Length: 358
Image 1: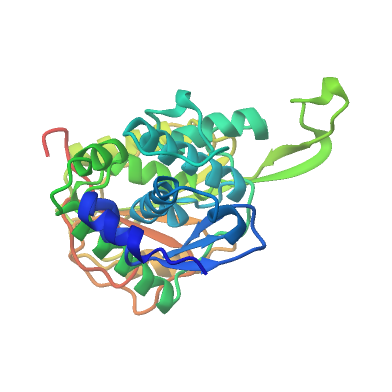
Image 2: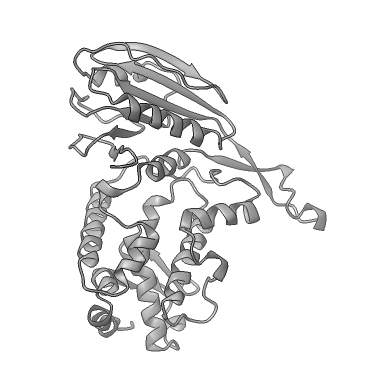
């Protein structure tokens, strides 16, 4: 076993942003891997790889692991290709570390053309290069439908350490948080959050009939991608408290996102204390809506209707002020509450929808 505690202490003194996060991560020996790998709150390493490295190169690995944690790369993967997503994250992180003077080990995943791009942007380029598909195609059915209690605790601890790290007096902290968009939840750009959520549910399969055309001319047969159909539901609270300006902006953004997908169905529900309308939109159709209602808000009506469907959506986007009656049980699909402000919800995630000046 290699003792990393002196290096963690060094990071705390010289680079407290990295040190605060890395100090809480467990170092685990794993001689079945080629070099090192970052899991949830853990850096696994092969002793034969680490031993010949200099102290500065080992510091680089700790910083790499700290940024993986801070950026929640594991949680952000969605249904992207696991190996390609890991590569994209390393390209993004390593380019930033190298640009800021950290010493990388030999044969690190690095390409200077990715220096100013996020992991999602890098993945889009790599996907077209390696997987012969567009940005939002996915190749894995192993997305987690929900977090266990241990996973929720681990995520909460990660977020707490990241907040603590951002408060440290570190000259590199501002550069890293600005480039990668690490902010408090209330300042996350709602468009990015929305795109990541919807994109994470668009899955592609791979098949050899027909094969990928990428290397076919060289006689190399690789699986080609075959996209699936995305089922998406949008519910609009018509109780009288909805900002129609923001709502129209939200609908326009959804339409823009769906233009990048090959096949989809959107069920649009308008509801206050009961369902006022239900309209289904297929590929390319313009989403139109009329806000009928004005009574109280009862979210249960929407969830009860969806429960009766033969084919349930992958995700429900609920536009509301969050002042209403919630269902007693969490549904078996992801729920995003699109709201003008943060509030406690019994399940799902809240995305704060703001105008250009907010």
